[in-house]
Structures are given as C-alpha cells and as structure tokens.
Amino acid sequence: MSGYYTIHDPLIERVMLTEDEIAETCERLGRRITEDYRGKELVLVSLLRGSLVFLADLCRHVQLDLKLDFMAISSYGSGEAVRIVKDLDEDIGGKHVLVVEDIVDTGLTLHYLLGVLAGRSPASLAVCALMDRRARRIADVPIAYRGLEIPDVFVVGYGIDLGGRYRNLPYVAVVRDEVMG
Ligand code: 5GP
Ligand code: MG
Image (cartoon, rainbow, N blue to C red; front, side, top):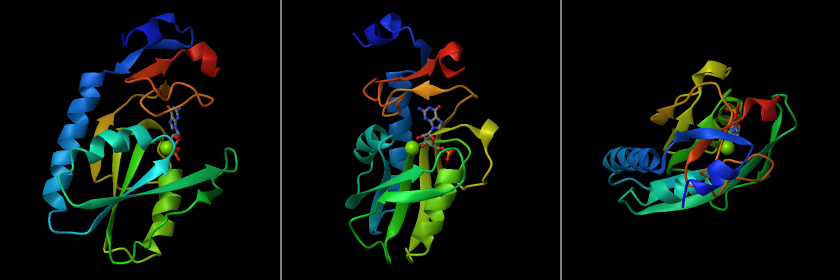
C-alpha cells in the first residue's frame, strides 16, 4: 500500500502531492512539450539525482523522437558556488535543450546550470520543473513548463531525498518541522 510508508514513518507529516496529482501534471506538461517541440531535435537534460523519477514519468508523455542526457551538480555547502560533478555525455550545440528539474527553490542551481548550458550554443534552452517554491526565490530563472506551486515547507519523495532516503516514495510528502529544525 502506498500509504504505509507515510503513516509509519515518524519523519513524515503528510502527503502534499498525491500519485494522481503528479501523474496528471506529467501528462499535462508532456502534452505541451510534445506540441512545442514537434519537428525539433530535443534533448531532455536531467539533474541527478532528484529529478530522475520525474524525468522517467515525464519523458513517457513526450511523444517525440528525443534524447536523454544527465548532469550532476554539487554545491559547496550553502553558498552560491556550485560545480559540475558529472557533465553531459553529448554535445548540445544546435539542439533544443529542455532542463528537467524536480524543484526550484532559490533558483541558484538552475541559474548556474543555465549559464553553463547557454555557453554551449544550444538552439534553444528552457526549463521544466515539477515543483516551484517561489517564496524562497533569489535568482529569477525562467520556468517555461511549471508543474505545481508549493508552499514553503521541506518535501521528500518522488525522487527527492532527505539524507539519501525517501526517493522511492511514489508521492511528495512534507517532512515534520521538528526534523528540519
Ligand atoms: P535551489 O538552487 O533552487 O535553491 O535548489 C534546488 C535544489 O535544492 C533542488 O533541485 C533540490 O535538490 C533541493 N531542494 C530544494 N527544496 C527542497 C526540498 O523541499 N526538499 C529536498 N529534499 N530538496 C530540496
Ligand atoms: Mg534537484
């Protein structure tokens, strides 16, 4: 049962996005992306590891001939300095690149990534994010395909972790306040 993990885990407060809501969102975004990129050479760029589950569901709603590529970025703690831990395997020059993100918070990660990718001369560059938490935005990043806006609470599940755990939850859940301090 999908509810089991939540009910019995003391760190989790409640479900915020259900499996159904997430599935509808993937379908809606996938349909729009399919329409917008028809006839174009599309590469979906996923940021490891949090956006992996979203990418897997989203890409199956994009009915186009596309490629997937992966990148991993690490921050040096809480500052703005980020670095590439794993780079893309293929050249994106001349390709239409859509960055797939799990959640945009301060926007600093995406701001950095978009800067790096823009320097490689893609034909176009845009962002698709499952969740948008605007309350904490610092860098104003354009989100062409926005899934759901979420309030200022820490979430886990559906690819998103807390200390490496909870990525396999099929829904997005809110972590108890006491846990986050
Ligand atoms: P930003 O650079 O926009 O502040 O941070 C984006 C990244 O921070 C996300 O891709 C995600 O990995 C992480 N993040 C932001 N909010 C949350 C959250 O509520 N829970 C978890 N587990 N990670 C988050
Ligand atoms: Mg992420």
